[in-house]
Image 1 (cartoon, rainbow, N blue to C red):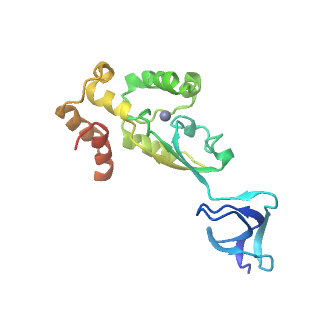
Image 2: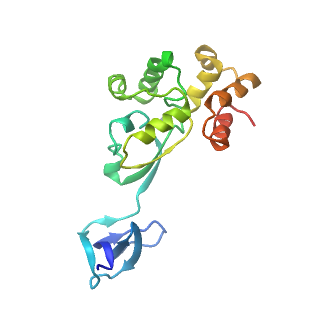
Image 3: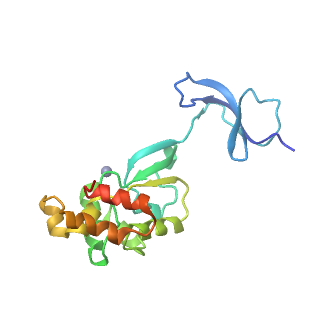
Length: 204
Ligand SMILES: [Zn+2]
């Protein structure tokens, strides 16, 4: 039986620890890096020739707007083409949950206006089988993905949910009643997610 499932051989390794780059082989067993070094003499079920290539950990993209695209493009191109293996959505405030059905078009127009995501693509590709944020996460879970996803609760939809569209646009701060209202509607997956929503509307 092979010692490693995969050996990535002869690449230039940049391991992310601030060590200078070095040439080496990487042995993978059961989905994890088992050894790094000169592994030419070792058995592997599969060998990947990385001569002339860089071998590095996947990049984490901390600011993206794949909220819609992830539903029809499991690899979230072009990020994955450039080595991104984990990406964040929602952290600059825009997103698609919680959104009441009558405001779906508005939220897509917002994404077009602020982030240049084509409205027609979203209209055709978003399943909209959610209203609340937990339901959105459930829908995301139902769709296959080739990258890791780290979703944040987006601020803009939460403010619109709590304050109404016009008040949210007006610049006034949420009232204590607004702050209480959101968690009540968004709660279904435990206190951790409840806290995130409260923080998003300014509750302590
Ligand atoms: Zn952004």
